[in-house]
Image (tube, rainbow, N blue to C red):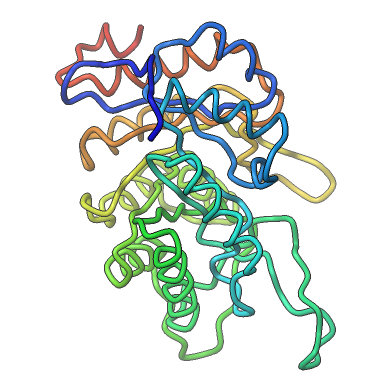
Length: 313
């Protein structure tokens, strides 16, 4: 059993807030031990059975609860889960005893070669699923397999998607929130709702000709998710890219949370209650104090009955 000597205690009813703990801040965070409710790390960075990375994570675990967030399980791949990946995740979960474990509603693994003995390749990206009954069945099977192996409830995150599927005529296609809600209902898993991903997808839909206002579309998305299913919220920055290939909005985790996303975060807390909330920042990682300021803003929004002055601080 780990002893967390510096776990902060905040007002009852507040949404717990953490930050993504990335390599540039390993030493400084351990030295300063700022007031945070949890730290999130990418699971795959700590799969090695020893070494400096795991030692640092165990030091962090002595002071904070840890949330393990994966990017490589490929839960929606029809070829099945990678046994090695699941083995390493199970080992890490047992060693760290995280407060939450999560990955994405996506796929990255597929057969290469087209034959029965074809090798499996990994796309090194989070590719979207078709929201069909068949894809839901595959996803449910794999999420249940993960939960059975880890012996705990798992969380699945909605994706920022830059392509969509053309389904055969007559195929039933779910709306994304209904698809995810069905996953949670059938498997008992929790949902990790990434608010920035929802907004990025709404902006890109608008660029493709959708008539609905992006914020209205996002609130409708959040309204369709049962509150009891939501285990964590993610907040991050995004950017717009305009080049020879066209204009697109990218969930790059490389800037402060945008004002419309803060607005949606307030709405999400009203819908779901004081859900643990993470500030993600993975590219162009700034000074630690910048992340802590973003975390403080999330905390202020999550205070029950917060005044406008508190929220804008």
